[in-house]
Amino acid sequence: MGADFLMKHIPRKIHLKYVKEVRPGGQITSSYDLEGLESNHQISSDGDINAQASIIWRSCDDRR
Image (cartoon, rainbow, N blue to C red; front, side, top):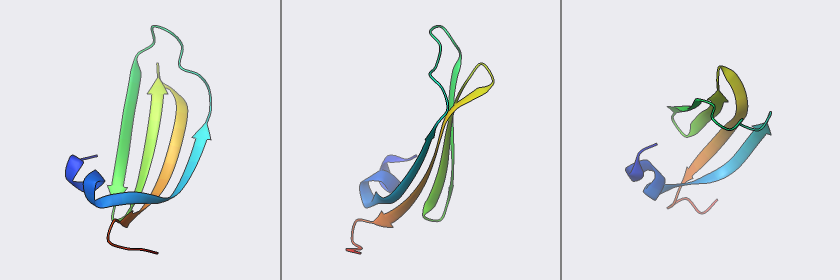
């Protein structure tokens, strides 16, 4: 995620799903998809999902 977005937004809600630990020496991949104020994140190693997160963001100016 870009620095500009992260400087102007903070998480309002985070849902984290931890699946399993990354093994030493494995090939780690991290990805995310941002649509509006919702982002989905995934960490994988050697083709297996290790963790997933869904984040709903709010503007730093929004006090709710």
